[in-house]
Length: 264
Image (cartoon, rainbow, N blue to C red; front, top):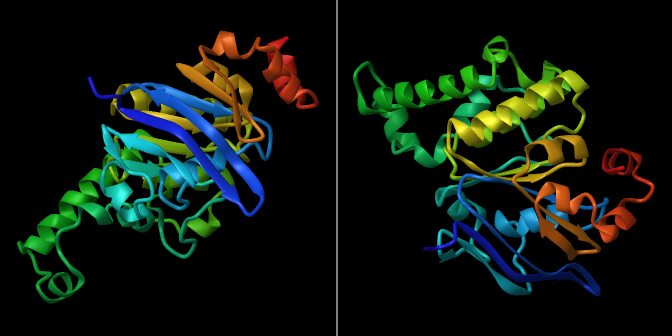
């Protein structure tokens, strides 16, 4: 049986700095797999390699048995990989609906010219627009974003914007979803809601999730497996209870009170 996602000895260097050093792991379909480590450990660099923003110096990245190493981001997205970003990358002067409709672009068959020229009631362009809006409405309902549907994103609270970025990634209908610190900037209530939504995405949509997150309580509560890295190198991969007790993980996190307090 082909592994769903696999990273094989991936290394990436920037000048004389090795940001990721021979990292390898496998992710089974349908699980929540978290990558943890202190700031600067190389977590987002891994995501950038997976999504095609960076090309590794060596190693391979396999998705459903296919080598996607070094492919352009749009080609990787078409294969079923979507991501959110640590810093919000939304169009602030567009509404929530418009931002989410942009996430449907890889599924749109009507081009700009034919859409503009033949957009009339009953046309293929009009039918396709309705279909895409129906898909977006399902995501809006799933994440309780009805109140923000027609509001400009730039005027919405930060936590809501983070949720809209998640919604836009879901609009691609991914099989593999990369979440880069999705709870950053959220209050405790918003984080608790996010935990339920991430579990719903896993259970109801069947999406496999790769998660980077600094909130260790969230990581330990929702992860099926965890990879801990430091200085670009793997420390341990295993079940949450195994990872949180590993001496090298505790050493790497000394000074980060949240993790030390949770693991104690």
